[in-house]
Image (spheres, rainbow, N blue to C red):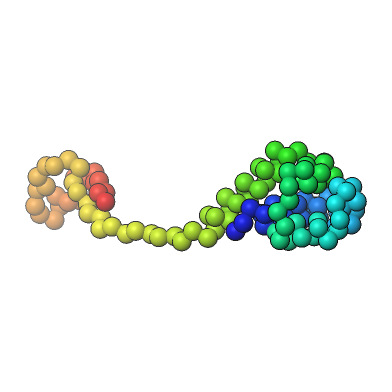
Length: 118
């Protein structure tokens, strides 16, 4: 996923959450509607001046935009990472290395602590 795609996605989401049309945002930010649409679709990489203008129009601090972008990037990266589960043999060892008396009653009357060792 490209940075411009995430930025565009965040702008689109925030614009829709605020109930602003693409045309309204473009007018306030003084950006053409087609160009803003291209930014939102992740096809154009906006300059820092354009980013600042769109942020102002959305009443959004640049740092808040970057925090949203970071969150979306982190989420996107985590969702695409393959999950590998490793299994290992587990053995049970007597934690108190002592002799256990034999016989059927001996096992039920002795409290035993065990440790799982992977």
